Amino acid sequence: MNKKSISFAAAAAVTLAPLALAAPSQGAVVAPAKTLYACQKKSNGALRIVKKSKKCKKSEKKISWNTQGPKGDKGDIGTPGAPGPGATPINASLTTTNMLGNTQSQEFAMGDSTLTIQCVSFLGGVGSSARITSPSAGTYQTRGSWLNNPNNAEGDYNVAPFRDSKDGSFNANTVTTMAQQTLQVIVTAGDANRNIGVMNYTITNGSGTYFVTYVATTVGQENPPTASPKGSCDVTGWWSKLS
View 1 (spheres, rainbow, N blue to C red):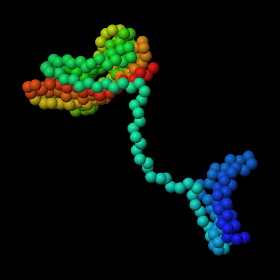
View 2 (cartoon, rainbow, N blue to C red; view 1 turned 180 degrees about the horizontal axis):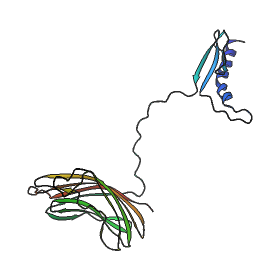
View 3 (cartoon, one colour; view 1 turned 90 degrees about the vertical axis):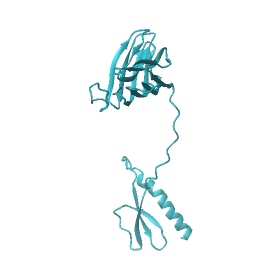
View 4 (cartoon, rainbow, N blue to C red; view 1 turned 90 degrees about the horizontal axis):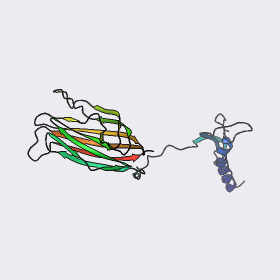
């Protein structure tokens, strides 16, 4: 046998051996081997696949290799995906100018209903909330979380997270505020306090079920400087029809 024949025989043995080991016998299922073992002839490098327990001849040496290599490096971050179908943005930046202020955003068309964001200031508090007006009666579920807890008790405001959770209903053609907590900031004289929250609403009426989510930032001042707003409410989010 010449060198070309030996090389070809060795290559064929290495290539076909995993298939032979992985092939099931009649009526049995055998998992592919994770590690292959072979006896390599010292004189010419010829290989023969053997079992792990098989001893090689004195003229050979035992070698082994994994059928699967080590895990590669982590790939680059992919490009952001396109916005999902049906998601409509909601953006509002509102201010109030006095102790009893009330500012409404533009009306956002949501199916056959309209959604507005309200920013209110009341004595020592400022807050934002969503309002729904629907041609048919329906229900809503509000689930929100704010970074700080605006408690009216002296020394106990803006100290702990709090949740805004409310389940309610609305009548046809009636403006309904869908929040339990309409004030998120309580301020003391001369101070400017800020609160940040995430609000989620699930709304169902005669035309279907809708989901609304947004991030809100509320800022309030007890005694604002001249020409400075009493409070401000910034909202960024989107709504989508679920069914």
